[in-house]
Length: 155
Image (cartoon, rainbow, N blue to C red; front, side, top):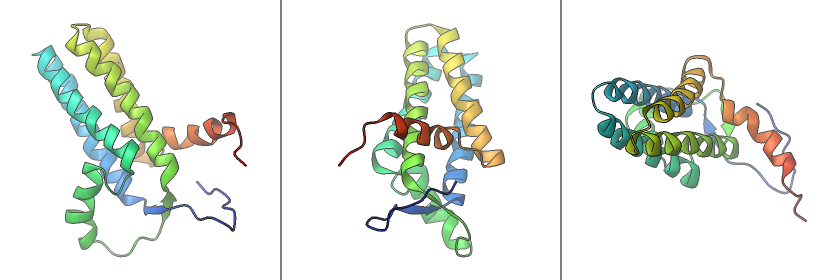
């Protein structure tokens, strides 16, 4: 996704492989949440709460300082060549926020005993994570330009 950048400021960029790695890890965690929910709804709620925290950290600190981003930078990136493609950080942070919202709803659902709410919210987060991991399609990143147009312009 290429966004024109004004000359006076630059947007931080990251290697696209980092967020895709994070999406694969997220996909695995969310699949485990749904499997665990069939045996223990409270355990699924606790596991999803941990993923919710990961989303929150990614939304606040960005992809490089999120837990999965740090894991990628420490274990995976040193073994790869230089990045050939980058993407801007703000849409990724927004995508993490969207993931946070779905995971938070799912966590509350599971912990309150509303298994359907927890499962559906987890399923939506899983769908978005899998799209990003398998196909490089970040739904939150696609929605980000629309949301930025709704915000009032700053002077």
